[in-house]
Image (tube, rainbow, N blue to C red; front, side, top):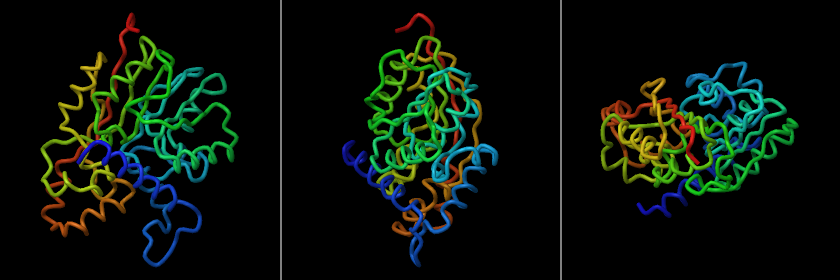
Length: 280
């Protein structure tokens, strides 16, 4: 698949999720019915506490992540935080609660429907230290050296140019700034029927890199002290809030043995890195 085709598919896939997560999506064949409780269950299973999920606006949690990067970031009051692929704003709102009124949180997302949802969530809950910007994570609409912490949750794997994403992340961080990422990586190569599936790409699977290659991309961008803080096998059925994973299974007529093999390839990792002092 070409890069532009991938970006278009991802944008359209997440626009659909944003539209379906509204209040009247339920129907006899619509998988988003009862999506709020599904999202709550998924998020708790990957590291969010009930207290955290109850502290954000209704509709901010779509159950799309693979970990809780805010829990790793050790955010401090007054810091500026950037969230790559901010979706409906879950991690931005959690970060905003941590950095307080003197801090600032920027969410960047390339899907207008997600931005609209996130901005509405911020208005409803009167968040004044959060903003959401339209942009691609390969070309961040953020000034050089302006951010203390970059977080991301199961988004960088969707990019066809991860080298560029980490270079951009390094650029916008202040010297001594921190990268905190939850993402999907691979223990072994995926079979062709997954790699060639648009649904699998939108569902965070087909775009994932081999674990060591992913960590190598971070180090190549200039980060130091790159460390995997946590690593667990990620349930295949939870990817992209379940419907996209199900679409892959149904479209490709995948057998139970094939599903188990794919699931054993996919790992959720939580990674940190530091931009050295003295670098611009």
